[in-house]
Length: 569
Image (cartoon, rainbow, N blue to C red; front, top):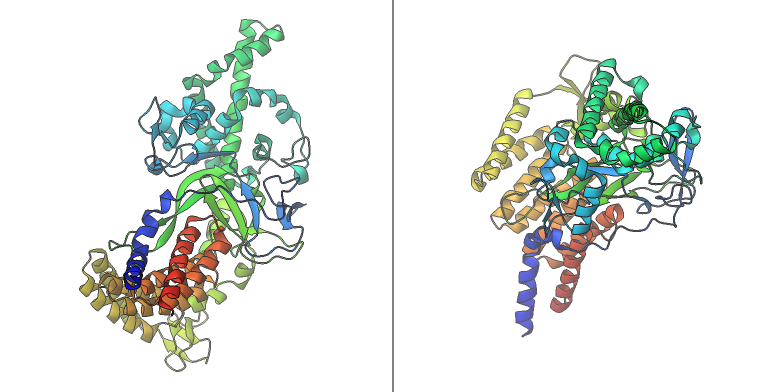
């Protein structure tokens, strides 16, 4: 009986890699976490551990009011408004962006779907009643669709009620966005007071955005949005004793005002929009073994509190999402008074210095002076370095010498780059990867093994290309059921991934999870448990205990622990 039980546990564990991501969407989420240290009385969607600060050079930004630790939850924020991307209409709720299990379609169009009647009703009453017949047009304007959504969520009645206030007030930039009670809330005022960067934009772009705002205003007029709220405007006009003829002029004034708000929000979104993402698995075509994960953009949103954080190419935080709720956690310790940095996209571990600077200047209009950028290209050269034939150290091109001249950073020796050999390694990798995609595993192994052998003779041991080849070889061996060999390649890859992305990066966690799944299939239970625990630690620090990846791995961890106890190993 005991032997049968052990066999059954082994079978379940060996299937863990197959079922874990398939069941991912069926796990019931407990809801967003609470912020660490209690709620902030000013930044009401943030922790008491942070403050809003201001200088004329930086504008508003976020600092720590106490010492914070990696893993602390600093912001839990619902968006003021958000728009689901069209490619996810069939799989996600149009209102809350949750994965669809039971589908409630829109009663007026065939494109939009919801997860519940409450989401359908909320969407219809807030914005979809207006947008329903114009979706194809709105898809064509890109991020400007979110500008329209902001106006619809705010509502004409509210926007006309603050029309005079917005047009006449002068705002102290240090307290912009605060309400009458001195709080920075999930409010229209907080969105309205975000910077537009109008002075930084090219005239051509401004004209384009202005025409787009005019188009969105026409959508509001043609949809009957102003007419549906006519009783609001009409009652105001009647109470002031205005005649019907004077109402036409007032209506035009309100239209111009709304058009101006649409343009303002388009300008703001260029720099302040956030991508809502979810972790999705790449299908390798074989039982889920050694699969990769990607953060896939699902929606675009505006989060006023998160927008206060300045950029660093080596950020202080990591963002994750539970449906449309943004959860911001610290990924490193920050002393009291230190600044909290977000990454606007160009991350030092994933993008080179020159490209980062170009992207930030083009979209966000500043030159980054973060820790990574101050080091320039020199610090990241090692991650793309070649191997010194004399001392095995990192060899990089010396820009002050003849093109192609390589200098070892360790021993100082010079050599020339063998471009023919590098092109051959690249050709072997591309051929091997294509064979793997076509499930021609033996051909893939042959090409990738030759590629790795050549790469090891040419590339420095921490070069990212080595880990890419090793990962593909692990997939090949796992596909053939050669799990011990697959685990060796993943272990080799982990060292390079850690050097490139960091010991507690998501990339490292993904590698440890792959290793654990392969070791389960190799029936190396203790090693599988250790790798699993490392993955859990990293995912939990970055995403919290309620994240699907953490819950899946914890389930596997419990099963492994029970098996090890049963086997007494």
